[in-house]
Image (cartoon, rainbow, N blue to C red; front, side, top):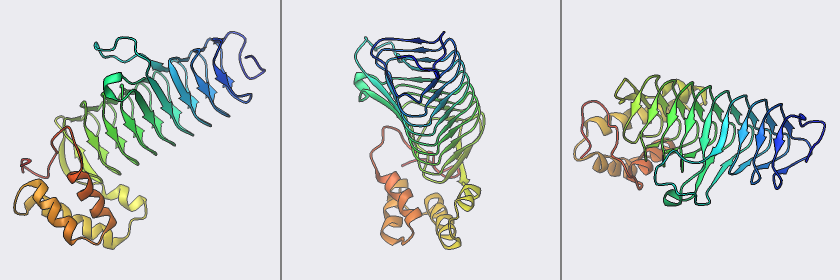
Length: 267
């Protein structure tokens, strides 16, 4: 399919599904199984391949590679996919891979995310809405990044890690275990240093909920019993939806242990 919004030097493989108002820049490649929805902008020198769907108004900048095969030696050519939501900004040299059969078969990205230059999303990762991954941040395979998370530049998220809603990861941080919602993690070997209070205030979270979150964090850090025991006690006592989000996250299914406050080790 060619239109005045598609540069003559772009390569569009037969079978690609592209709406009439999609823009595709010079020297870009669109594979045969790709679906591009309304008002998607593919700039110059972009590769979009594999069974990849990009929804409305997402913008992909030069030299990004979207939908290539996983960097997983177990991958054997099975049919897997990538789904990217609406109004995302995918900057230069970003790579996002399709899923693997062993990981559910699909990598997914929500809406209104920003992937800064050089960032990477690996196979089977699940990225929520309003997520920011700064320059050269990397999300490994099978990770779950919930809504409103910020990952600082040059940070790495270990395979299977979950990062809860509204958490913030400082720059140059290695995250090896799950991060509770609204948590603040920083340091070369990431530690849970507190709550993302600035982010909470920017979201308009009320003083009462912030006070409840502070108290909950102290209970998780210093209360009796294991980390999960403390979470169960909090869940029984809290009336805050934000504290409830933390306790549900801790008590939910996980393939990793948790980053815990202070020097407390997960029980």
